[in-house]
Image 1 (cartoon, rainbow, N blue to C red):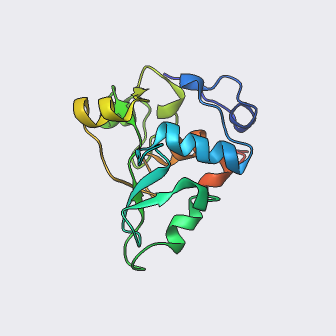
Image 2: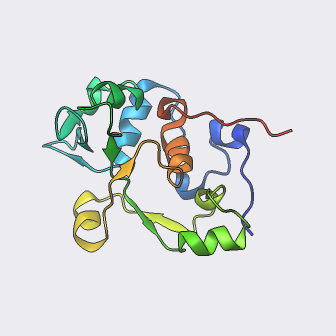
Length: 159
């Protein structure tokens, strides 16, 4: 079973898988968008999106993922982005191993479960890119690890 990573470890960037640095500033958030999600344009500074008013949004216009909801082209659709992640371990297999039904808590704590493909062209050509809604329960933990408080999600303290 994978090790549980605490909120403090994520915020302090200690024991982060894949050398992910949890952003502390808007600039670091924007850099992580470019690093961990499909971006297009001359300098890869346009976040590739779906269900927004445009198909790409300049990362410099974003202060958090909440800004994508404001740019959503309809209140019935969830904005979607494409994480540059290649799952190695099947999600269902992980849920069975960890006795989870509707969540993947801890999946992104173990770098043996997935790999990050930083090169956009390699990711798009050699892997299976997926659109992921901002409210996706499976990728929520990945959003929290890569985008921190700018993801719109927070870690709760378990008692």
